[in-house]
Every structure is written in structure tokens, then in C-alpha cells.
Length: 304
Image 1 (tube, helix red, strand yellow):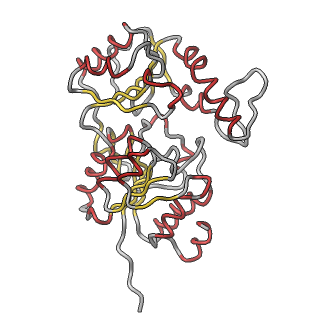
Image 2: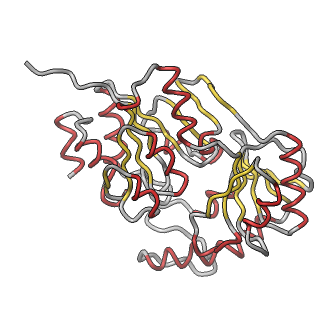
Image 3: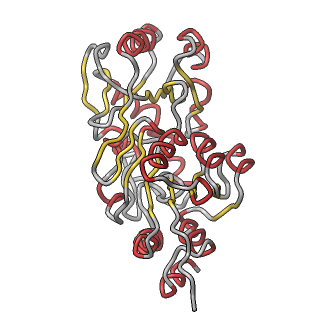
């Protein structure tokens, strides 16, 4: 007689974990579907705002989403949490970034917001970085287009810019997080001036240096979002699984009953992980699901 395994709740980072260059390998898509057919719950848990999560990423079918690195939580179509910067602080941040000529994008679930002209500035700053990455991975940008994608991958710069709405004065915008790309001084100096209401993590694009990073609401992180779902569903923390690779995944891997880091990920993520799995190119999510017994028998071959 076989016993039914305990249902797990799995929380997946997107970039560098579930997907690479905006595309999820078929093994990952099928792993999500297989785990859910067995009664497990699977959630997206990303630093991206909902407005930057494309439909093709969600197409596998998920039980809910945690976006904005814990700022917004949705379960089965119901929004359980949608926190944003308090309006006075939000305006003060925008004013400070504008006065110091920082290239930034404000992130909200419904849209991204940028100053008029920031798209051209980001093309100048980010274009060469993405082009160098493509060359290093064996792709060749098309002539005259340093951000061209290859092998069917989405253009990473357009992935950022497509949802942006532009305006001249963003001090009244409602948002949950800010991505900064080109500050003329260390971004930490600016955030320190804002006081205890804000936090800062480094940009995942390390080539941008200390003039780039993500400004977020202090006390908001992915584990906060997980706890909202945990409380609503009455989950046992021991049955929570989290998989991620970046600095904004540290808290969720620490909180989960089983924290899994992606090999080659941020050193602090690797340090807190219980396990390590491969990146998307190696079908790491499917491998981890198989090792934890989350897949149907005929699906485990996809993880090998």
C-alpha cells in the first residue's frame, strides 16, 4: 500500500531560476503542471512587478503569484496584499532621484513609470551590457541593434521598456519598488538620506556597479508574501519549498522549510540554502521537483 505524499507549497523565482532570458524550459513547465496534478501548490515568487510578468511565463498554470518581491500577493485570482510606498515618501524618493539625475523606473502591478527620455538613456547604458552577454553566450547581435535577441529569446531591453508609461513629473505615481540603473554616485548614499523607510539591494546587472540597484519598502521581501499565503491556507512552514538565485531570494530561502539555491547564484543565497540545483539550462527546477518527489512517475524523465 502506498501512502499519499504530503502536499507541498513551492515558491519559484522567475529570472535565473524558472526561466532564463524570459523563457522557461519545457521541462520546467511540465514540472509545474505535474506537481499541481499531484495536489501540490506552485506559486511564482518574483521581484518583478506583475506588469513585467509576461503571459507566457504564467502559461504553465500557477496557484498564485507573489510579485514586487513580496509587495503584492494574489491567490487564485484574489488579491490578498498590494502594498506601496506611502505617498509622501514616494514623492520624496522621486524628487531625490530627479535632483541627482538618476535613471530609474517605478514599478507598480499595473504598469511601470519612467521619466520622458529614460528609454533612450537605458538603451545607451544597458544595450552594450546585454550585447556583451549575448556574445558571451554564443549569440551575435544583429547589425545596428545591440539588444537583438537570438534563439527565439525575448529582447531583454524591450522586456524592461515595453510596459513603461512615460511622464514629466512622477511625484504623484503610486508604486512599490524602484529599479535604478545609472546614478552618478553610489546609490547607497541616496537611500541613506531617505531614512529607515527604504531598503536597497544591488542590481542583478553587476556591470552597472554601485550606481544601480533596487529601492524597496523596508521590511518588504519575498518571505513576507509567502507568510500571507501561508496564513490564508493554513500551511505548515515545514512543507514550504522555495527556489531562487538572487539577493532578493535570501529571505524566502531562509524562511522555507526547504530552501533551494540555483548553482552560480548570489553567494548569500547559496550560503542559506539547504540544497543546490542547476540553472534553467540544466532544467534545475524539474530536477529539484523530482528529487523532492513532487512529480508524477512518467514526468521524472524530463528532469534528467
